[in-house]
Each structure stands twice: as C-alpha cells, then as structure tokens.
Length: 103
Image (cartoon, rainbow, N blue to C red; front, top):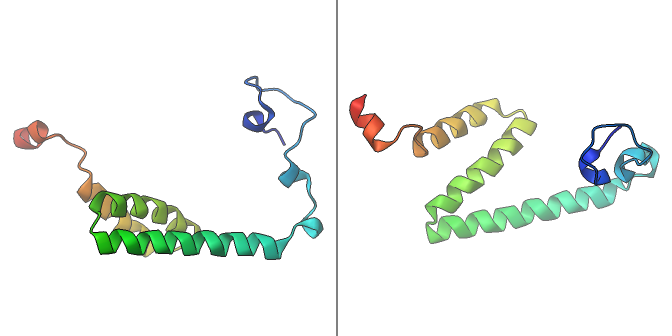
C-alpha cells in the first residue's frame, strides 16, 4: 500500500515505507483503546452540539450538519442523509441574489 501523503514525497511511486496502522496485524490492534477514542470524540461532539443549540449559533449548527452527514453515510442512515442534504442545499443556495431574480 502506498501512502504518498504520509511518506513526505510528492512523487507517485513505490517506496519501502508503509503506514504503521496498515502494517499492524489485526490481532495486535487494541480494539478497546480504539473504541474508547471513538466514544470520547462522540461525547465531545455531542457537548459541542448542545452548546451550539443552546447559544443559537446557526452557522456552527450547519457546520455540525456537514460533519453529521459523514456519520449518517457511514451508519447507513440514508433517510437522514437525504434530509440533511436537502437542509444544507436549502440553507446554502447555489445561486446568487441576482441570479435568483433573473430566474
């Protein structure tokens, strides 16, 4: 496996360097640690999300929706993925004001 961005080279070619997480066999991975890291990050995201809602920070809530889109895709929650996409498309219009007036 080639990891150009990790190897520090801009040339796309074979090298001897391998990503340590890719080389490590599945039996040596610490699944408890990986689970704890994920749960910690999810807890931090939840606290940040609650603070955004309490403060009424609209732009930050929209940024959180963008992050949640990845979580919805990964968790196969396609119904909420489509709804989130519609929300983001409605809040971030693709046309400028002058283009909207012409249409």
